[in-house]
Amino acid sequence: MSEKSQRLVELDFFRGLVLLIIVVDHIGGSMVSRFTLHAFALNDAAEVFVFLGGFATATAYLSMARRRSESAARVRFLKRSFEIYRAFLVTAALMLAASFLLRPLFGHAPNLALHDLDSLISEPVASIAQILTFERQPYLAAVLPMYALFALFVPLILPLARSKPWLLLGLSLALWAFAPGIGEYMPSVDDNLWDFNPAAWQLMFVLGVLARAQPIYQRVSAHKLGWAVSAGAVALIAGMAYYKLLVLPPALDSAFKRDLAGVRVINFLAIAWIATNLARYGVIKRIASRLPWVGAVGRDGMACFVMGTVISLTVDSILFTLTDGLVNVPAGLAGDAIAISLLLAVPQVRQPMMGWFASKWRAPAPRAVAITDNR
Image 1 (cartoon, one colour):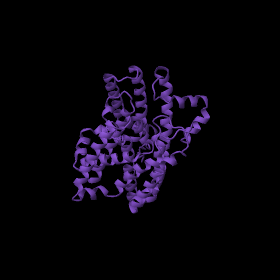
Image 2 (image 1 turned 90 degrees about the vertical axis):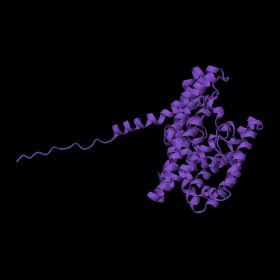
Image 3 (image 1 turned 180 degrees about the vertical axis):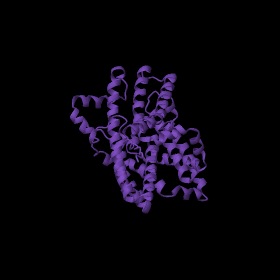
Image 4 (image 1 turned 60 degrees about the horizontal axis):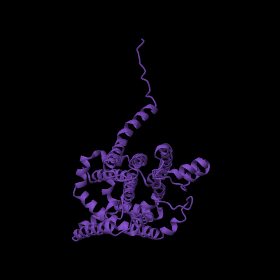
């Protein structure tokens, strides 16, 4: 197998794994989430998700530019920005619909989008306008607005990543440094700041783009002191885990996320370095070959993300009500099993359905005309 295809297999696996983690991380009573990345690191699956998004974006852009043209790649990502915007609208609608359906029986669950639902019922025109302009971002739909903005700027980011990577990194770091002030001016209702400040999180996206466009890892790992970087990464991960588990107040932990605090970036980079080493030695490839359904989730990432939001909200609301918000190991494990199984089923169900709809809407083939010799 070529290096390119091997890398894509690992990319799909990581993306699928992250989507599965995101689902359980948003279930309050989950048992599995007590052992995922956020439990022992200062960052969580969000950094991995955005970084992989940048890496996958660069892969797709460079491939299209090579096969077709730069202009075709630029147009494709302008269209991609609209596709993500559309996915945001679908996700927002699903969050509101799920909250409406779950409210009669599970209305005390903390993550239902009840405030947004009440606003929609009382002021439908204003609420819809606020969703269309990103001012209102119902629960779990909040990551998609910044993704739409990132896709919009891909035609500017990718050429810089190839020709002037240090300039791109410098500009990204400068924007990240001023992000807290910029975030206050993002459009929002009731002066609520965005859950993800795009001016800050663009740094993670740009790092993913640079990791694909420039051979930084290969150069460092091939150096005679490359082992020292790996040892330092392990030490850093251990130190951050100690700080997270024994020192960091939970309230401060959540405050670190919106504007992408530097310690989160550093912790992620250390973990990413070790993960890349595992991929380099074929460990991830072997795991991916044994768990192909995880890669299937990664390949169908947009649909799985959208459906994952509904799965998380539904399972979280039911579990919270059944357990009165208390820790219940059997119920939590059952909720995890249901949520993970449902997400794994999404690509298995969606692909046949898409094929069926395509066959129904496909223009019928011209009917063969029998030719007879009447002579």
